[in-house]
Amino acid sequence: MDAKRYLERDWSTLAPELLNLIARNLSEISDFVRFRAVCKTWRFSTPITDLPPQFPWILGIRWNNNYERDRLLYSVNFRKVHTILAPKYLRKRFLGSSQGYILCDLTDQDPSAHNAHKFSLLNPLNNHEILLPAWDLGLYSNIYSIGPLQCKIGEYVVFVECVGFQDYKLAFCCLGQDKWCELKLDYDGAFRHFLLKSLLFVVEVDTGVTKVSDLFTGNLAFVIPPVENYMQDMDMNMAMEMEAVYFIVEASGDFLLVFLRSDPSLNVYDDRFDVYKLDLKGSNSPCWVKVHNIGNQALFIDKHGCFALEAGDFSEVKANCIYYNVSYSKIMMIDIETGDRELLECPSIGIECWFVPNLQRLLVQ
Image (cartoon, rainbow, N blue to C red; front, top):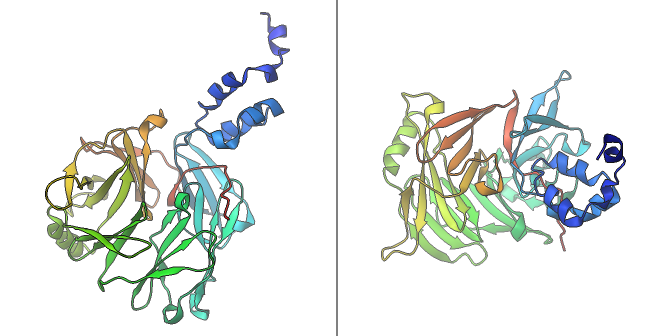
């Protein structure tokens, strides 16, 4: 075929199965959007519901010349920075992301002026925003911190922790409802919480004991003893005036606990993660069992939480690895089995959270 006939070919007549095959290999969302914009045939053959699995981006901030914050999305895999110019993103505090949406705090800078906190879910790629009901904090109006986030959008549940002047408050909101449901815990000390498959995991910081209960009924399901050497690591963290860093995450049907173990004599980039799998099938009571291989899974960790992805869905993701926001603007990839680590290239931005791009609009009844 000569060049002239090649250029004159009507590419809109490509077979739909061939178009789908091409689209499934577009792992950068901007390429997927350009592909759909070629013509009506290509657009109708590749609905946004067929978006291929996307390598997570980084949601970050950078101060501009006007001393204002620019919101940025950075594609780690393709090393591209996308600036968010939409007014919806100004003066909002981002609390983490889930399934293409970001949980935003809409409350004014002076929360002591009123009792209610306001939140929304926002998709930065299509500007779709879902307003959540205000949460009346009552006597807890002087809030100084909100987080960490547990946002299970696929189950239509948003779950937050408010750290007040004197106490903690936990609450969840099912999308489409007009109120937050507050949870009462029989524990007064510091804790970490994680929401997985409607199960609430509460880790008591001073003991390492994990209590698992049903989110909606509050019934206690089982109790898990602390991981090995937990108290020793906690004593070390207290001596270093550091918080313990650990997360519980679901990966391919398993519950994993990821525990950062720090050595005060080493650089922060030498910290290591130990991974434990919840054993529910043994003859003994439930317990955490240390593992060195999590199969074809990769874990992504930031200050708000942790999630797992199938490494096989991406040619760029290494299985059995942790991608960790190790500092203000650094991402480290750590091999769970060998401990080998690699510092990933990242621009000089303040990293807020991982974000998995998604074009779909969440429908709320």
